[in-house]
Length: 582
Image 1: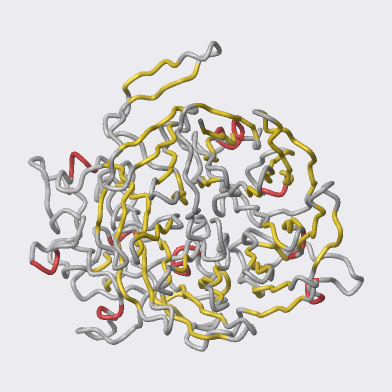
Image 2 (image 1 turned 90 degrees about the vertical axis):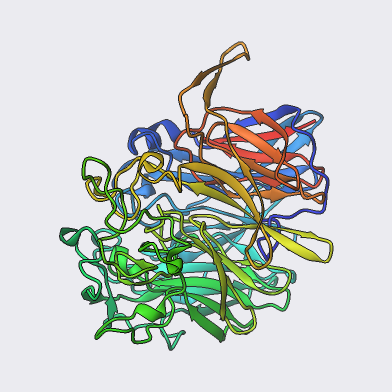
């Protein structure tokens, strides 16, 4: 993320992708993780922390089990460059564990930060460690008093659930969540969540998210839900209204690293805890003052202004790119025409015939951003003060939306039709800036539902106007497309023991970009890794500068790329940290 604004930009020239300088396994549990997840690696990992000649990176041990992530262990490692070798100096053994397990969400992220001459590392029970960078020894454990049991022990059901962020003054910010200690993650409502601030002198302040936002529903309130699968195709009728559900506590989203603007404003994201799907639809972007008071909060769903038929909220959402009735109002839709069928009468994945233009088929209202606990999207503060956040949406082939809000008051400004699990990078140039995001046009999962009869899984065959394709896209400050680079590689390659590479063409529609945060150098060269195992360097204008094969990463997690101060490129791939340079 490179800085408190999370822009992914570094004022250095990236090195050429001439060779792999280091290949370090930091997650030896990947084969087990993939075996239990149908071949996918559903975990998020730390960005390498590069400081001069030194590199700090997580590692994992223990065992991977389906029921709980807590059977694994997490560690922080310091490496240093000695000549051409990246040598490990020490390992710090954290006692951090994430909440939940495989049935709840993808594996949460464990992420340290460098500040004030120390390494700050997540710990157990909502704590963080202050670690000596010279020898890896813990200097102290920092923990708010309210996270302790009466006997002074750490609470087993209180979790540090975000990467740590340091502002320009050395203050550390992170999020904590407290849940019930029995049952699965979503079996009971959450208890509370907090933003924690630790100063360079170890003074601790805590702000509860509960009740912070007066516009958010309370835990026992009813929130608008979604239609039942028995009602497919959606919406059941042009005037149908889905049932309400109990919202649950408005608590912090998992994996959301607080972003800090130059004026000290802190940005974070919350969602309703219950139930799993509907609660994700009731999220907010929060701006918090440096003194930990609320500056503003804005709904990612949009306001629930009454719509054109009784009980509806059609006018409330931000996105008008849902159901496609063939009118000009449907120009932004990726979906096939409502009710369209093939020559055999099979539905092609559009909404029910007669559906209103632009609505989210699952709710019959205009679309809004969802906050899934699977994702690691984090707010990014742009140079003009606006705030960018990648939110989920299902009805556009699960591509989500990149949302842009005014930093002054939280007003919604624009959206782009990809945002799922992505923290954008920002390239500053010529008195302005550009936004870079992965832009995957997924297939294999249906347009807006998971039932192939209504939402067939072959996107290219059933929706040739919006086929399966995979891009890195650069956007203007107002989220207009400046350029796109399309991955056209169709070959899965394997590196043999002798160093040679064997390839087979088995991906006719190419591979998705698995990077959730690209890196950009001073010349605007974009570095991003793909599921095909290649690290790409892309010129401004969207042309290929260079690429290098590391290893095949099918089903790999959404991993970041980053730059060192000397221009080396750090990328991650199936539990390996690769360093690439000249």
